[in-house]
Length: 174
Image (cartoon, rainbow, N blue to C red; front, side):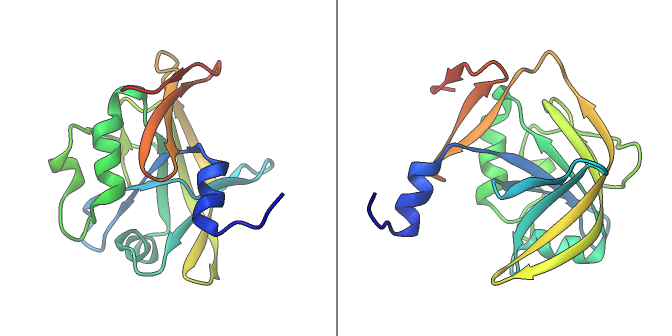
């Protein structure tokens, strides 16, 4: 083993499951952010944590509304999922700029993205500032799935997305 700089370590540790976090801004306009920094934090009750940069538009949205939906984009959503991770919702309406279509959530206000593999509706119960990010911890209040969408996206080296199925099959060229 040798010491590594952080970018090389991230590269070696990838792929990371890539998700889309849907929030609402202070005008109740939905926003979508691509994110790899998420984790389950509790089994009972089921809770998910997302780490969002302090200066990000999504951070501002989460401060205005204590709810989010975390969607696992399916294989065919790669192009639009990548846009949501590289453009700011301050500048564009990502539902207008992509082929994503909102579907009504059952408990929270932010919508679900149609065609996602899995979507978790979450209500924030706690947040912790961790350096230049805040870890928002959400209680899962509803879960939705699409059993015919087995492959979802993973980030490779924070430079591209690949598809991996629930059975482990990998598709590099999407």
